[in-house]
Image (cartoon, rainbow, N blue to C red; front, side, top):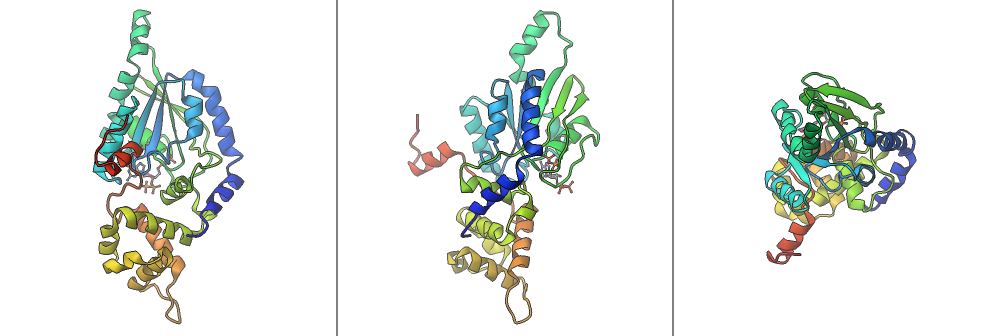
Length: 305
Ligand code: G4P
């Protein structure tokens, strides 16, 4: 894990083009909607929160969705919901593959827009449709949410971040959803943000080094869920003291991933590890904790202003 900063360089090489176009389209369309539904990944709510989307959509009522909450640690998701609530931001957890979960979004949208809807009623425009822009980073589950919400396969779900799509309007009951293509931003603030986005598959794997990725994931997860790794890969506790690359090799060896000469096939082991993490084989994992709550824990529960 020496040089994940390469992620930033490589992203800059492929970011311009369709993602720049998407941001421009968002800037143009924002005036045509009543509110914004920003879909985040429940495992990394802050890393998946796109500052460019925030900048463009900041003036509109906003609802955050912690999607893939079925993959995240339920206790931590609860803390994130409190965190957003404390910041006075509407937020709901979701498993977009479940129709019921996707439909549960209607109530908070209506609550978020209560003042606007009231004004419309008073002006005799009670039947006006509610226009919602659906935004988020690639692979966060926008298409899946829209499919569940609309009840048919309207938006094609594909596990390929960065696949170009145009905007489209989808009418469901009293709602018109504006489905925007997934978009990242040019320069990540921290290495942690870049690596988190890579772990969950929002940055195209073909521009990443799979061994760097696996080592990054191991170093992150062994700090927060060490037991999961020990159990899954039948390791002794002292394996956690190994450098990430040596831990990768130890896991590859346990799985019998050897090449001729008896050496571990590190690339194969790395692919297996990243694949198993993404397939939730390590259990429900949250890679980020709410910042303030993390501080409170450090301060032995002392409240911050
Ligand atoms: P996008 O439009 O934002 O790019 O994302 P998309 O809906 O294409 O979803 C990307 C992948 O994430 C899909 O998996 C989808 O099924 C999965 N997904 C979306 N929402 C959730 C969720 O709430 N929980 C879980 N566990 N997975 C979710 P895929 O591997 O491409 O395909 P599939 O075989 O699952 O259909």
